[in-house]
Image (cartoon, rainbow, N blue to C red; front, side, top):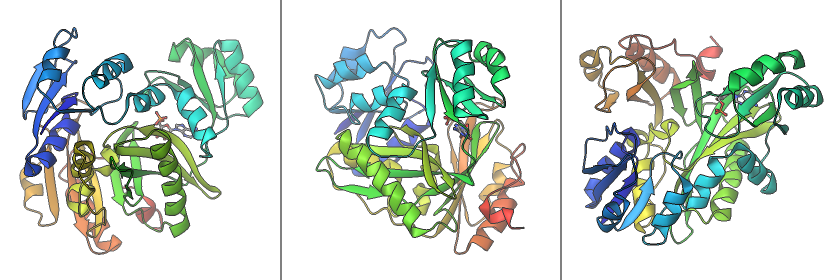
Length: 372
Ligand code: AMP
């Protein structure tokens, strides 16, 4: 079976790495002009001239990023199975559609309003009560196109800074930590849930993911599973879906979803019986799902900007290095290291040992380190 992947970055690369043992072949379709997957066949097509060619070479289509034109996915779906469905893309590309769907399915969100001018932003901030977060409705990711307003008087500056015709204004959530749940749904409707991961960001970029999230109460995992299952079934979804959430003392609050394998699930390559990548390939190909049981405790450390002393990390017996074949550049995701351990105490020690070989890696902060 030949799987066509829209996008040709590191997620596509890791999908292929997981798919080869199952005898899948891969064709990547790149619209950026700088593919980095480095595996399989790659069609570089900045002007959309070779979509027919791409289609003729593949049996099924999936994607590794959500900012591709929905019309392209819809057109492809007329000819070959496209998983996840184009509607999932449509929902993710618009924060209002996304939060509306969450609300319809009973998934808690921050209270929100829409603003289409500096004045209406100010009014929304007054009604919701500051602080609020204003975000462009489309084209936002990794905290870009966003502003936190500490008072309604900041509306003019925030509006100019974001520079979009419409923004969503959300009440600021006082979360205790950021978490995510990853689930996978097969063609026959079978669903499996990975344990929730705890995520630490620095300058808007994910740095560390710990799974299973330490100290998580069982009912919180169950709540997250209920929320993501509602989305999977509503969308008749096939493949891996990620739901990013805030944990608060009152329960989980949903932030956003990603219709794809996700950085906060990279720990699963060595840390789970079946990785998110293999399970996505299994689902997209119509196979049964693999076990999502964790093999122990994991922490994923992202390698951002510079590679650091990879040779030293390779000497650590508990570290698994994954490099994406990309050149160094500030803020760029170049790879990650998965650390496994049998106890959280051991995990913290191992993560700190590894992180010292990664220049620019922020100090390891998490619920595990907060207690001292
Ligand atoms: P997003 O692009 O929506 O994922 O937001 C990027 C980051 O901004 C999140 O990971 C949070 O750290 C923060 N953030 C977004 N929305 C809120 C909110 N309503 N309350 C508090 N923090 C937020």
